[in-house]
Image (cartoon, rainbow, N blue to C red; front, side, top):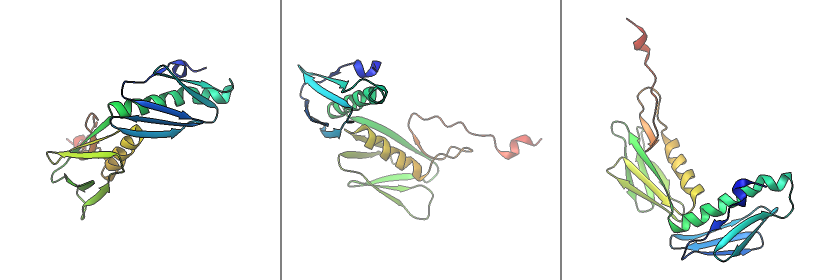
Length: 180
C-alpha cells in the first residue's frame, strides 16, 4: 500500500466528483476535468471525501495507488483554484503578443512563431516579456509551458531565451575568460 495513496482526497465545496466504473469526472467553478483511472484501482466518494484503493493488493496495484490518488487530487485542485505557469523572455528584441487564443513569439528567428492554446487554457501576456499560462488541467498547463520554452530555451553563455519565471540559469564563463 502506498502512503500517498492512503490519504483521502478532500472534495471542496462547489465541486462535484462523479465516479462511473474507471472514469472519474470532476466539475467545479474553473471547469470540468475527466480522466480514466487504471484498471487495478477503485475510487469511492463518501461524505465529501474520495478514497482510492486497489482492487487486488499486489505489486502491480501498489505502483498505481499513489499515482491515481495524486492525479485525482490534481483534478480537484484544478477545478477549484487552477494551475499557473509563468514564463519570461530574456533577450534584446524578444517579445510576445497575444492574438485572441494564439500566442505570437518573436525570439530572434526570421519569422514569428505562432502557438495555439488548447481548449480550457488561458494565456496572458504582460509587459511584452511575461507570459502567464493558466488552466484547470496541470498536465496541459505544464506541457504548453514546456512547448513555449522549447521554442527558444535559455542559452548557457548569456542566459537569453524563454525561461520559467522562477528558473535560475547558471551561465558559463566565455572563452575569453581564460586568457590573460
